[in-house]
Image 1 (spheres, rainbow, N blue to C red):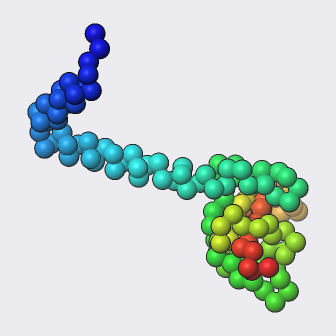
Image 2 (cartoon, rainbow, N blue to C red; image 1 turned 45 degrees about the vertical axis):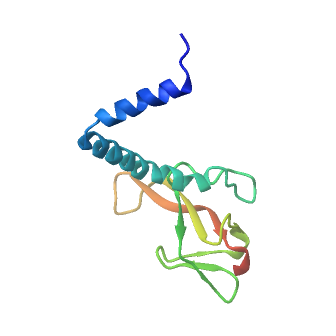
Length: 136
Protein backbone atom coordinates (compact mmCIF):
# COMPACT_ATOMS: atom_id res chain seq x y z
CA UNK A 1 0.00 0.00 0.00
CA UNK A 2 1.43 3.35 -1.03
CA UNK A 3 1.00 6.37 1.23
CA UNK A 4 0.89 9.95 0.09
CA UNK A 5 3.60 12.33 1.18
CA UNK A 6 0.95 14.21 3.18
CA UNK A 7 0.12 11.07 5.20
CA UNK A 8 3.81 10.34 5.82
CA UNK A 9 4.46 13.93 6.92
CA UNK A 10 1.44 13.81 9.22
CA UNK A 11 2.64 10.57 10.80
CA UNK A 12 6.18 11.93 11.24
CA UNK A 13 4.75 15.03 12.90
CA UNK A 14 2.78 12.89 15.38
CA UNK A 15 5.88 10.85 16.25
CA UNK A 16 7.99 13.99 16.70
CA UNK A 17 5.31 15.44 19.00
CA UNK A 18 5.47 12.33 21.18
CA UNK A 19 9.25 12.53 21.74
CA UNK A 20 10.19 14.15 25.00
CA UNK A 21 12.82 16.85 25.40
CA UNK A 22 15.20 14.18 26.70
CA UNK A 23 15.03 12.32 23.39
CA UNK A 24 15.81 15.48 21.42
CA UNK A 25 18.66 16.32 23.77
CA UNK A 26 20.06 12.81 23.38
CA UNK A 27 19.81 13.02 19.58
CA UNK A 28 21.55 16.41 19.55
CA UNK A 29 24.36 15.18 21.80
CA UNK A 30 24.82 12.04 19.69
CA UNK A 31 25.05 14.12 16.52
CA UNK A 32 27.63 16.45 18.10
CA UNK A 33 29.67 13.49 19.34
CA UNK A 34 29.72 11.95 15.88
CA UNK A 35 30.89 15.22 14.36
CA UNK A 36 33.65 15.59 16.95
CA UNK A 37 34.86 12.02 16.54
CA UNK A 38 34.95 12.23 12.77
CA UNK A 39 36.90 15.50 12.56
CA UNK A 40 40.41 13.93 12.81
CA UNK A 41 39.54 11.68 9.91
CA UNK A 42 38.24 14.60 7.88
CA UNK A 43 41.27 16.68 8.78
CA UNK A 44 43.61 13.96 7.58
CA UNK A 45 41.89 13.66 4.19
CA UNK A 46 44.05 16.48 2.80
CA UNK A 47 47.02 14.08 2.90
CA UNK A 48 45.36 11.04 1.35
CA UNK A 49 46.64 11.46 -2.19
CA UNK A 50 49.70 13.68 -1.67
CA UNK A 51 52.84 12.39 -3.34
CA UNK A 52 56.49 13.34 -3.19
CA UNK A 53 58.48 14.52 -6.22
CA UNK A 54 59.10 10.90 -7.25
CA UNK A 55 55.39 10.03 -7.16
CA UNK A 56 55.41 8.01 -3.90
CA UNK A 57 52.52 8.44 -1.46
CA UNK A 58 53.54 10.62 1.47
CA UNK A 59 51.04 9.61 4.09
CA UNK A 60 50.58 6.40 6.00
CA UNK A 61 47.43 7.40 7.82
CA UNK A 62 48.72 9.45 10.75
CA UNK A 63 52.21 10.62 9.91
CA UNK A 64 51.51 13.99 8.26
CA UNK A 65 50.67 17.26 9.95
CA UNK A 66 50.68 20.99 9.50
CA UNK A 67 53.87 22.58 10.91
CA UNK A 68 55.48 25.95 11.40
CA UNK A 69 58.55 26.56 9.28
CA UNK A 70 60.99 29.38 8.72
CA UNK A 71 62.41 30.01 5.26
CA UNK A 72 66.18 30.40 5.57
CA UNK A 73 68.29 32.74 3.42
CA UNK A 74 69.61 29.78 1.37
CA UNK A 75 66.03 28.68 0.55
CA UNK A 76 66.01 25.75 2.98
CA UNK A 77 63.28 25.39 5.60
CA UNK A 78 63.84 25.23 9.35
CA UNK A 79 61.29 23.38 11.50
CA UNK A 80 61.54 24.80 15.05
CA UNK A 81 59.45 22.00 16.58
CA UNK A 82 61.95 19.30 15.56
CA UNK A 83 65.07 21.38 14.91
CA UNK A 84 65.27 19.87 11.44
CA UNK A 85 66.40 21.71 8.32
CA UNK A 86 64.64 20.61 5.14
CA UNK A 87 66.56 21.10 1.87
CA UNK A 88 64.85 23.48 -0.57
CA UNK A 89 64.82 20.86 -3.33
CA UNK A 90 62.77 18.51 -1.15
CA UNK A 91 59.84 20.95 -0.93
CA UNK A 92 56.73 20.25 -2.98
CA UNK A 93 53.93 22.81 -3.55
CA UNK A 94 51.46 22.78 -0.66
CA UNK A 95 47.81 21.86 -1.29
CA UNK A 96 46.86 24.92 0.77
CA UNK A 97 48.79 27.92 2.08
CA UNK A 98 50.45 26.07 4.96
CA UNK A 99 53.57 24.02 5.56
CA UNK A 100 53.07 20.26 5.98
CA UNK A 101 55.54 17.64 7.17
CA UNK A 102 55.18 13.89 6.58
CA UNK A 103 57.45 11.52 8.49
CA UNK A 104 58.20 7.85 8.96
CA UNK A 105 60.23 5.82 11.41
CA UNK A 106 63.46 4.33 10.16
CA UNK A 107 64.39 1.41 12.37
CA UNK A 108 67.84 -0.07 12.70
CA UNK A 109 69.77 -2.52 14.80
CA UNK A 110 72.83 -0.90 16.33
CA UNK A 111 75.75 -2.06 18.42
CA UNK A 112 78.88 -0.36 19.70
CA UNK A 113 81.94 -1.22 21.74
CA UNK A 114 80.12 -0.54 25.02
CA UNK A 115 77.07 -2.70 24.35
CA UNK A 116 77.36 -6.44 24.00
CA UNK A 117 73.81 -6.68 22.67
CA UNK A 118 72.21 -5.33 19.57
CA UNK A 119 69.74 -2.55 20.28
CA UNK A 120 66.73 -1.59 18.18
CA UNK A 121 66.47 2.13 17.56
CA UNK A 122 64.06 4.10 15.50
CA UNK A 123 64.61 7.57 14.13
CA UNK A 124 61.99 9.87 12.66
CA UNK A 125 62.81 10.71 9.05
CA UNK A 126 61.15 13.16 6.66
CA UNK A 127 59.17 11.50 3.89
CA UNK A 128 57.61 14.63 2.32
CA UNK A 129 57.59 18.34 2.94
CA UNK A 130 55.07 20.77 1.45
CA UNK A 131 55.56 24.52 1.30
CA UNK A 132 53.23 27.30 0.15
CA UNK A 133 54.07 28.54 -3.34
CA UNK A 134 54.79 32.09 -2.09
CA UNK A 135 57.57 30.81 0.21
CA UNK A 136 59.79 29.60 -2.67
